[in-house]
Length: 256
Image 1: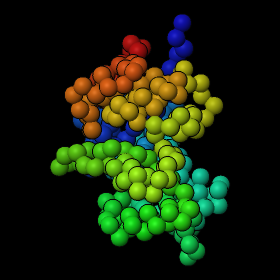
Image 2: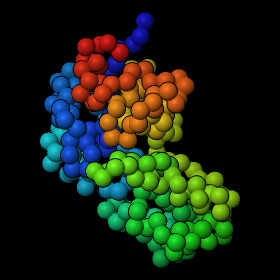
Image 3: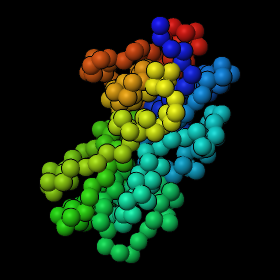
């Protein structure tokens, strides 16, 4: 007999919102999940914004959440940097730097830490990172997202630039965020994976990553979803729905 779902992990960008626009009906659907006494955690690979900036964006869109409910790959990367006492070269967006201000150093970096940072993905910055890697620095990928959804269409994620640095330096990146099992287990804390479910628009990072950690995965057809994504992973998603609204209703009606 399947265990009752007590915890819902929810992706943010592409699942609840796209930039400054909420997915239609998502605000109300999240409220219904909260009213069902489910534990909610927002798990995100978003690295273009600090936790404060992200929280403020979501509350302005009308979402009911607490800052401490957001579990981000930025926070996971920060913990890793502190635990290993690293001196990082941070290739992250200026809007995310707030989460790392106290970790800035004037010393020669011994780690290259990369998130989604379009303004940093130029030859000079990437070449600086490349030279550090050749000199023994470690390569830490906050995540390896292939692409993400913007109002004007899909856009390259950091994965392409990380793979380029790996190829040129012959250094393998350590991935911190989704889809790593460690990220999902940290997000769950003491919760049994069998009692949790993940909702996201990325079939690899959200769904396959969660299912590798023993969490059921629901794929939503918004954000970066492309037709046929559900057929690209094995096992496939537990369910596929048009949007977060239908996914939430499914959980509430215990049809999972």
